[in-house]
Length: 307
Image (cartoon, rainbow, N blue to C red; front, side, top):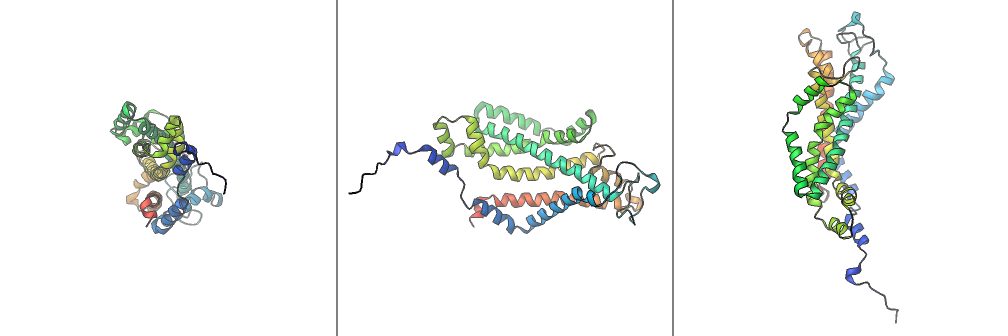
C-alpha cells in the first residue's frame, strides 16, 4: 500500500497561497486589454497623433532651428515663405518654432499635472473608501466643497496673485484635477474592500497600508490609467484657457493658449497662420488623448474582454 498522505485539515490550508491565487489577475488579462485596444481604430489614430505631436515638439527643434529668444520687429507678421514656413508672429518670432516651444510647455505641464493629480487623488480616494465611516464622510465632503468652486475663476485668481511659471501652473492645475480621480477610486475601493482577498488580509493581521497599496490600488489600475489619460487632455485645455486669457507663461516662453490669444487679434487682417496651426494642434492633441482614454476604458472593461 502506498504510504498515507497527510492532508491538512480544511481550516489549516495555507492562507497566503489562497490570497496569492485570489489577487493574481487572469493570465490572459493583459493580452485581452491589448487586443481590445488594438481593435479600436480611433485609439490607433490617437496613439499615432500623440507620438507625432511629441516628436514635433521635442525632436522638431533639433532639426528645425529658430531664434525664440530675441524678437525681430522688422519681420513681424510676415506671411509664410522661405526661411519661415509658417510665417512670423507680431514680434518677429518664427511661428513654426514657436509652435514647437509652446507644445513643449503645454505637454510637460499636462503630463505633470495629470500624474500629480492622479497620485494624490488615488491615495485620497483609496484611504477614504477603505476606512469608511466618519473618515470617509469628512474626506468626501472636502472633495464636494472643492468641486463646488468654479475652477477657472480660482485658477485666474491664483495666476493673478502668484508668480506665473511652469511649476506654479502645474501645481495650480493639479490642485483641482485630483478631485475627480479621488471620487472614482473611492467608489472602486468601496467595492473592492469587500472582496475575499482583502478580508483575508485583515484576518491575517495585515495593516491598512498593506491592503491599500498591495491589493486595492493595483486592482483599480484600469480606472487609474484611464482617468490619467483624460486628465492630460483636461490639463492641456485648462492651460490653453489660462494662456488665452493672458495668464500663461510669460515671454520669451510660449504656450499654445497665449499664441492663440495673440493670433485672434489679427483675425480680420487675414493672417491665418497665427490662428489655424495652433488651434489645430490644441484640438488634435486633446482629441488624441480622448480617443486613447475611451479605448483604454473599453479595453479594461472585463465584459469586452470576454466577448
